[in-house]
Image 1 (cartoon, rainbow, N blue to C red):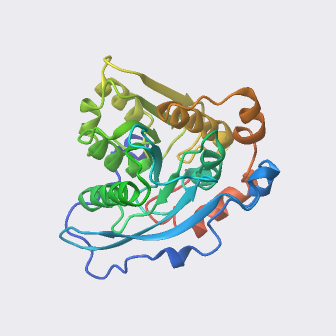
Image 2: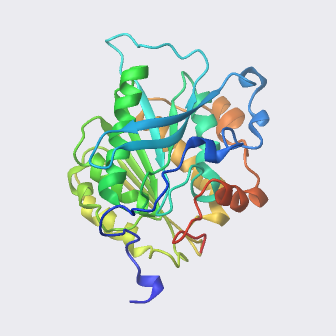
Length: 300
């Protein structure tokens, strides 16, 4: 099978015996995007990012690292009559915490700054590319956010291999109110068949040489016609949507906000959503520092 036809980055078999589970301390300096100061001054120093090592209780046990972006003046717990939504942002087959073209690093602060604010967790994996363990990482994160902050609805976003845990969890847990992917694989994504009518967003570059854009086209078809589905192909772009990162980030933000019941008005769009918190020349280096370009992931 040629590279352009590749549809999976999953790894079979047990967890590696020599794998050192990563700690959030391995990601120093990656709490906020480089230019968070470009957000309105009222948010300066008020969007807190909590470094976490979340306990996962399964056959492997252990801790999964992540960064939780919290809105200013977040009140916990919420009144019982209120539902609260969080976004969980997942990277690819090498793990990582900044996302494709470092979009997650920027999205975390922006989501926290919207309206009443949407908490956003950039979550790593204990054993990347092994879906059975990654699914448990996501579930443990949902339990943590529910127990600690009263968050009871979740939007899951995944890049590349990350589509597997996104749709596995989304297809079986009604607390998931929406799923979005960037350049997703198709392996281990059968849960998308059970997602409707909850919305799905699929983004992919037509020049992706790591996972074929036909993967997202296939997922679009598997979702069916009973709910809200969006497929957006970026002409000639690569696996990390490097040439359209700012646009793709905006599409993801709008989708997450809509799933959370928030409307991004023109003032917020100009002041928050359209701000460039990561410059184009910084994106790849930040991905390297954040672990998102570990083999077999690539910007190609």
